[in-house]
Image (cartoon, rainbow, N blue to C red):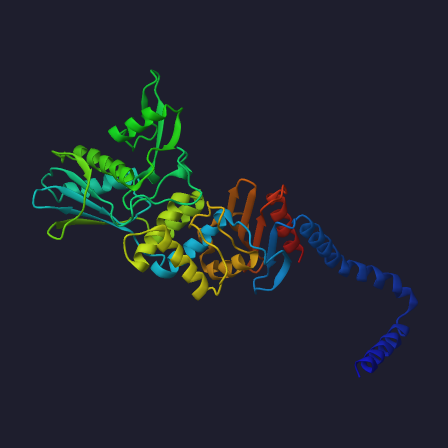
Length: 418
């Protein structure tokens, strides 16, 4: 039956061609070549693009309606590096909402000690501690010891892939932190260590650690566990309170809030979760990603926050909401080489994240998150189409020396032609 229809269509085509003057044939041929040129060019670009993806790499490009345009090794489990932060952000938005704000509580006990209880706020920077000190100064007459309660997280969290170096990406996580648990210093003309940030004083704890480092000017992490992180935060607060005329009479130490203590102030972050996530993506902050992950674990499964609880939240979200059953998650930032996702897995994540794509870094028509580990280069995100609707792309280079920028450029040009 199909063969008979084909013969009939062919017969009608030849009859139509017979009615066209022979002098028109060259023009018809030119038009046909012109019409077929974009398709031929697109096919050539696709072939060139896919040839640059090795057997250990993966690529997927899809149209705004979810139709896959290019794919290679799309089911292969790859190291996602920092593109994993998109999943962490997505799970946080799901459970907390973009308008959620972290909080930090302040109490006084019967002995007039001032107590600070942290809940994992990743953006307790110097300017914030100054605002907190101003608010507290209006609420307290004075205080004895400054006691730091960091029990909302376990105090010694080990993130796979995070080492004991002084690099900022090895900064520890904790329930009560300051300045991403890093310090930026320089030396004056006499060689004396001073703060490189006018808003951040050089506290005794920071100075002690920096002297031990003996390093050149720069930003360093000055602690490697939650208790030390809390101590640094406490010293900053004590400094700013003294500036406000509320100097402590005792010491800065770790302790706990007790049931009989009086709540005097609750600081609600000036940053929403959405704003915090945008900063996390902008600076690709591993500290912020894992801080949010651990706080999320405590929120969903109860304190204290642990890495295992946070990872459980990601796995449950991936399975129950995204229907991804065989991903491997070791942390929330992508710093661990134990993380494994396929390009298809990331495609499911990107489809769900699409309403929030403006949180990602933007360059021209591309919204993206990149990732880099030794021997690993990744990028995932969206390319705005002419209609305003985004195309999806995932590039996982896990053992390739290919230039990821030129691959993405090739993808973008092919979509311009398509």
